[in-house]
Length: 141
Image 1 (tube, rainbow, N blue to C red):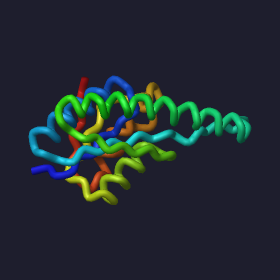
Image 2: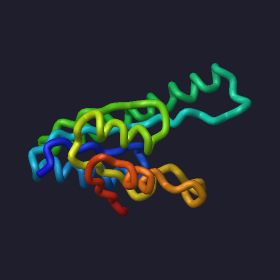
Image 3: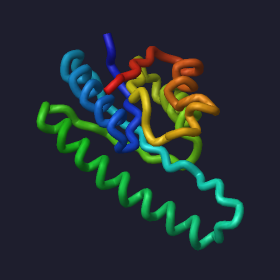
């Protein structure tokens, strides 16, 4: 049923739950498993270039650590996890990568790091479900 699965992964509890589901689905269907982590472009009007670069570097290091833990978790089930990291808007990049990579399923957590802004602007999950080119599994945790 699913040959390629993409999971949105930011290390939040919702993303970790989505990863667990995605690993199980990849094992069940013998599917390729990919994760996409997104570093949101800072929106600090007063930040210097150096501050923005430092924040990006710290986020890359943290995501690399989280992705390695997810790769090890997948490997325990005999699944190879391919990881991608991009800079930009999470919902937009998840939808674009799902289309570009011809994924049949996109797995995301119901809530991540969006916090209170999700109430006003709509969550990443809401946006992905509206625009994804494939089926979307939204995992509640």
